[in-house]
Length: 485
Image 1 (cartoon, helix red, strand yellow):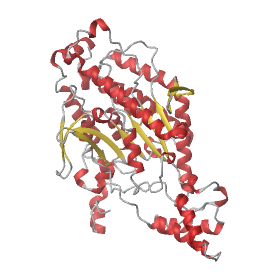
Image 2 (cartoon, helix red, strand yellow; image 1 turned 30 degrees about the vertical axis):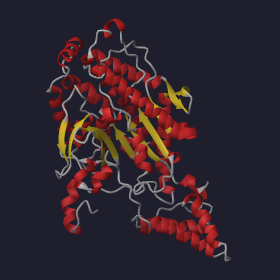
Image 3 (spheres, helix red, strand yellow; image 1 turned 180 degrees about the vertical axis):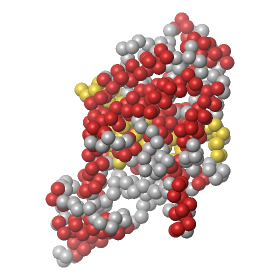
Image 4 (spheres, one colour; image 1 turned 135 degrees about the vertical axis):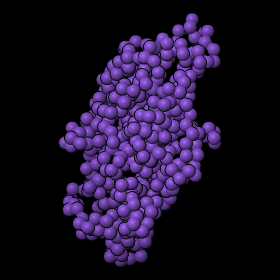
């Protein structure tokens, strides 16, 4: 897997903090000043918020004027800031979307509701998912959603709304997955073992229309989208952070979407190159390598001190993980499956494996969060269905009946009680519904967004990318390349 760079962040902020603490310690005199300074810095590597008003205002002016380029520091009220320094670091907000096929309607509906809640909580009718999350990871159709919600043509606003995600699937299902007849669809798969190239052509056309010339650099926030590289026989992680480091890891966004969605036996593998042609990849679906990318997103944040300088552990994260309905009832009738050959088992086995891997990651992440999982980690997943058993080809059936069933399951999922993975205790059904959990999360996201205007240091320090329309002009004016910026 291509590892995200983990270079140390610039020392300007930390140096200024140390200098400020040292100054205040020096004023008291005595030989214990150095020991007191070390004690303060060892605890949190940040200044105590219990400083006097003058020190707070001085640092705010230094921060705004010299560290982050603002000519006019924002007027803050130090008296309104309370609590220890660790509470002033803020939380890095992470969105993760599982991989799947037609079941992508479920997380799409959850995203649409969350964006609606964000508009309501913030009072901003133009609020978007990308405004409130700092990092997004998606696999398979989840990777496509990630590109849709964070890709931008102007470097300011995302191309798509959250409502567009699940509608993308419902509108293009028949063209992507073949015949609308479920029976002929299954017979063709069982006979040939694949769906042919028609779906691949449709995916290519739709992705090109959606993203045209955009690359990983043209995403608003850090994104992580996995695939499996057949040339290196290893997972590969498309990363905005890597793309901004070197053109050798910058790929066209429409090809990234094709790669992560290249389900074996459904769509053809994708042979692709980076924009400068130096990195090659023969990709198949991200779901095979990483059906639940939540752990990858968390690891990216914890080890990327350049963009997330003050994150020390999972307590500094706020994570939303959207599942594909792993608990949906699937009908495997014994009298039927006992006659299946390896070819018949191909799709069901992939479904079982992907769902099992996604659930394992959920359990591991819940354990990693420990006692703060309820306040820092939210998993939205279907908890069974009253709509009856589903067929094993649920992810590849484009029929109207399957689409309508999945839309119904998605709406039912949001009404269901939220299911939480408990530390060493399996699953637990919460009192809150998924609707209520998303409402709560929207409130936390909006509150975090507002608090960032009143913090001493930035919660995030993203690498900047110059929008393509301005790239040539700025390059001529400043005399540097986009990569050097």
